[in-house]
Length: 50
Picture 1 (cartoon, rainbow, N blue to C red):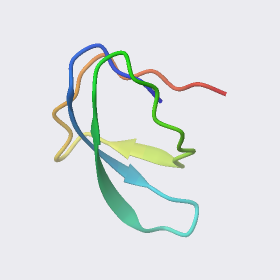
Picture 2: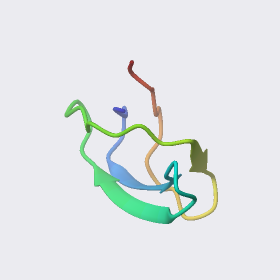
Picture 3: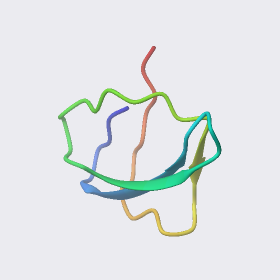
């Protein structure tokens, strides 16, 4: 997961837990969320990587 503009991202894990992570633009974050929630997410330009 990466983003164009740094900020917080609220994700849902495979076990159903909501986790808030802080992403820095241009720095890939190794996570496999089931869902990215809009509420509480401030980062923009989020892209998933597989």
